[in-house]
Length: 81
Image (cartoon, rainbow, N blue to C red; front, side, top):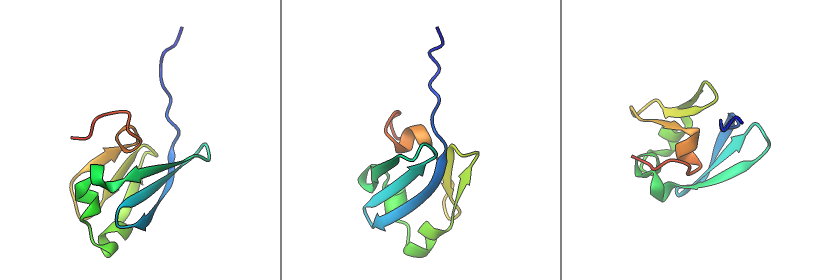
């Protein structure tokens, strides 16, 4: 029996306001991410939030910071640093 978890890919992200991030996934689901759990992202300016990249469909990074966030962190399957 294979117990490997396969996570869907990050398709896009969308900031609703300064405290909520929507993560759109390849399986057409959308996760609502409260940015209180990610204060570094929450404190980015509006311009800095626009400058992001999705890496290998599994990671999210913003060009103005060094942190890289995995899909597991964003949707709450692993504890945030």
